Each structure stands twice: as structure tokens, then as C-alpha cells.
Amino acid sequence: MAYHLYWLSGVPSVWRVMLALNLKKIRYTETRFDPGSAEMSDPSFLQINPRGQVPVLMTPDGPIRESLAILAYLDRVKSEPPLFGRSATEAGVIWQWIMDYENHLRGAMVTLATIAFTGEQKTRAADLAGAMQVGVREFATILHRLRLMPWLGGNKISAADIVLYPGIQWMRRSLDHLEPSELHDMMHNPALKNWEQKIERLPKFERTVPPGWSTDAPMNIVGLA
Image 1 (cartoon, one colour):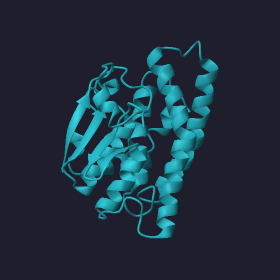
Image 2 (spheres, helix red, strand yellow):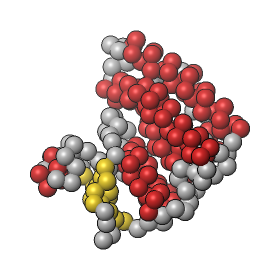
Image 3 (tube, helix red, strand yellow):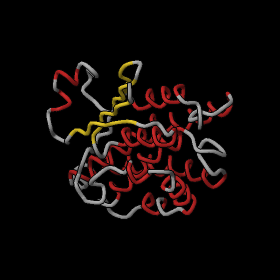
């Protein structure tokens, strides 16, 4: 059975799965859902994922939902290149960066994106300031790491890079709709730009970029799965 990915454009968690599939050189077919449609609540899809969310990867072992679970599955299916390191130390470092993002930065990103694309900068000024503060704090840690190491997990690309890259691009889109800030300045850091460019040089990278992200369409401002 071939691998088949169910996805929705503009969702960072979908993008990370596509990056992982390409990095592993795993071929797959796909079904793209349209934003705002009822396709994900259709009974046939709910049989695959009762939560009605994407991404979902159909595999020879059945459907796998949740992007981190999909990455872990792919790493067992095809061990090279490893997404979660080769040693206990590497695995710990990689998971540390993933969980830092999921538990600390991602929530601030959701707040920034929601405010940016709904035009609530004035009515939610306190929430915006709080999210900016968290963003600056977390990005300072990321930038320090990237000044020291070529990749977040160490000397080679890993799941940490694949998880954070789409989220950072999501934040860039959000910041384009907000007033200049310290966080805007941090996004121009040379170490960050160099890291992004290395990811963007990966094979078939252009096929993973969400359609419509070259426009200002306020798509999928809430991260899924």
C-alpha cells in the first residue's frame, strides 16, 4: 500500500510532515482539503481520524494522525536520515527543542497570528504584548543555539528543524501584519536566515510550500495536529 497524505494548505504541522517525507525520500499520494469546506467532517474522513483534523498519513499499518506521531513513525519505517538522532544524547536534545516550541513558543504564535489576521491589534493590545514578550524570549534561545550549531539538534538536520521551520514561517506571515517590534528585528538575524536557507535548499522543498502563502490570504491561523 502506498502512503497517502490528507492535508490542508497553510497548516504548519502539515508542512513538517511533507518536509519529513521528502527528506526520507518516501513517495506518497495526497488529498488536499479546501479551507472552510466540510470535507474533514465527512463521515468517510472521520472514520480515518475521528477528530476531523489534518495531517493524517495513511500507511500500510493504518492511519497515523498528529504530526509528531507521523514523524516518529516515518523514522521507524526508514531509518536514514534519522530524524531523532542516533544516540540517547542526540534524541534528548532534539526532543528538548521540539517540546520547547510546542509548550512555550507555539501558543504565542497562535496569539500573534490570530490578532494579526483578525485586525484586533488595538482591542487585544495586552494579549499582543504578552505574546511578543514570549516570542522575544524564546527566539533569543533559538538564535543563540543557531549561532553555535548548524542545526538545532546538532551537526545534522533533525526533527527539531523540521518542526520549527514551518512555525517560524507562519510567524513571519503574522508579523507582516503587525507594527515593527524587537521580534521583527530578530527575524532578520543572519544565523536564522542561514538556517532557513539550508532547509530551503533541501530536495523538492518548493513542493512543500503551502499554496497561497505568497499572498495575504488569512489562511489557517490556528495550528492543527
